[in-house]
Amino acid sequence: MAKGYWVSVYRTIFDPEKLDAYNKLAAPAVAAGGGRVFVRGGKTVAHDDGIAERVVLIEFDSFDQAVAAHASEAYQQALDVLSGGVERDFRIVEGVED
Image (tube, rainbow, N blue to C red; front, side, top):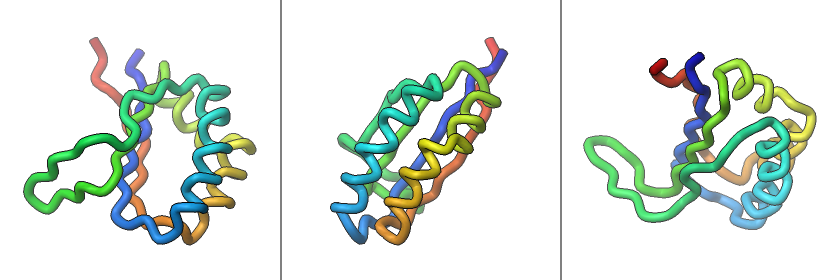
């Protein structure tokens, strides 16, 4: 079964306090949904039209698990706190099967 991934690229962080509050709620929601954080910020080299602000990569055991974690009440509460604090490109993608 292919794994699922959350890929989030932040274009702009308007309100760092909202982002901090979101992170406090999102981290336990992600863990409860079975997610494992592989990348959270850190160094970035962007090419072409890429953005080098903040990148987050989270792995789940399956695509369906990744979708369910995003839909969870706990994660939705985190999103409510983040509202208007950032502009980001968020995707849930299916990994390559071995």
